[in-house]
Structure formats: structure tokens, C-alpha cells
Image (cartoon, rainbow, N blue to C red):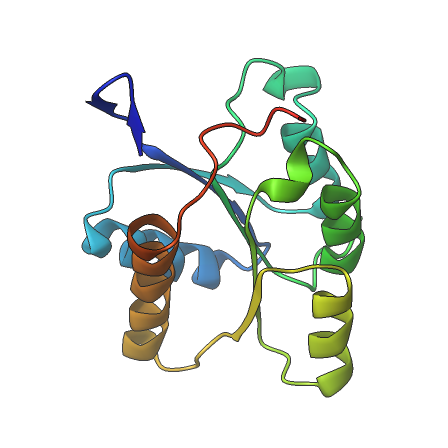
Length: 152
């Protein structure tokens, strides 16, 4: 992203409780050479705290992209997605669902809650890496996103 003629790192929020998937995502993002700040939270409650900039997150920047798992402790991904998309400030942040589920009901529920896309996590490490690189390329090279999330 460009801010005042200077390149600004992309702010990515990964909401994932599986340490192996966190490591794979970190590796894939690093290999993509996308200048970014990756924030990681492990449950839905913490994700909402960060997004609402409460408590220890009061001075944190809002993410430019959210990678959201569905199976989370404390507050599941559907609940988090619903809160994001019902908030006037947060609703324009793209949310990519990254889930192991290929259940049609999970897919439909995600899109009904206004997920921007739903991607089934590949089991193969190399495929997982390709998927994460593709998300970054698509969201920050091809797609136009608003500069800020202030309500109009």
C-alpha cells in the first residue's frame, strides 16, 4: 500500500489457533516477499479485541486483510465474521475464510455472513504456500481496496 508517496507495509491479521497452520502461513507470507506486518491471535475474543482496538490493542493499526479460521476457541469464526461485517468501520476489511471444512453449510454460512472469499486449507505444504501467496497477490496487487476504513 502507498501512503503519502511512501510504501506502507500491509497489515494482515491471522486468526488461527493451530500452531502448525500459523507457522505455514508465516512461512508462505515471508516467501511471498510482500512487505507486511502479520499479527496473530489465537481465538475469536482476542480477534474482536484487536479489531475494536480495545485493551492492549488500543494503539494497534487496523488490518488491511483478515485471514480467519472457522474453528476457534472462545468465539468461533462465524461469530467473529458476523461482528466484523455488522460494524461500520470493520465491514470493508476483506475477510478470507481459511478452513479445513469443505462442508457446503460452512461455505454458504460464510458467504451469507459476507465473507469476501472461502478457501479450503490444502493439506499439502507446497499447496498451502501457493494459496497464501495467491491471496496476497490477489488482495494487494489486483484488487483495489479503500485507503482507510472510516465510515462515510
